[in-house]
Image (cartoon, rainbow, N blue to C red; front, side, top):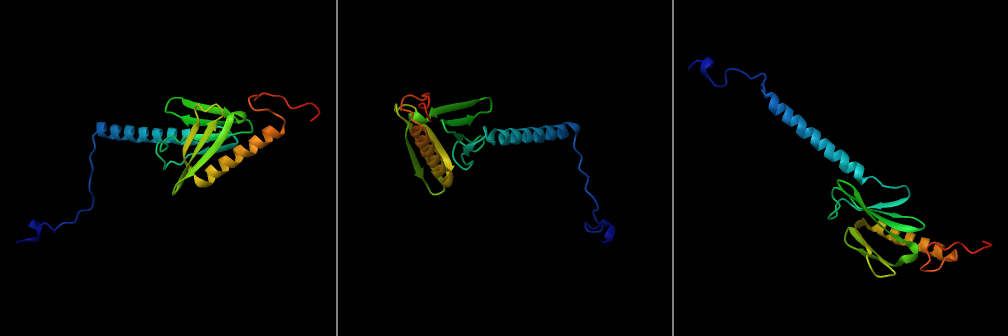
Length: 164
């Protein structure tokens, strides 16, 4: 048998891949949509306001693509839940927070912020342990400052007493 009829007689130097234009444009469109999806997910996951913003871990249920964020200011706690279109925000004034409960798990923690009226608590799940403890500490700190300023419960807009 001569070498010219053998399967191993010639070496393959290049492989040509022929894609039709329709397949090529389909691949380009899929890659563009994937990049747009990743960009929107990244932008919605950035802090929504300046200050003490705590973002839930993307490893927790319900926070994989669009993580919930909690903003703690000297006057209120705001839970910000982004959506693909729009957002949902819920806030509780410091004067109306009755308790803060932190439940820690193996890796992540849940924070329950209850109101003095007992209705509609803010439930934050999937935060890192250190963030959950810091959230509770900040809320208690801001409540102490609020009540030391002479404000009364049930009067969130009470002005500071004269002479201070």
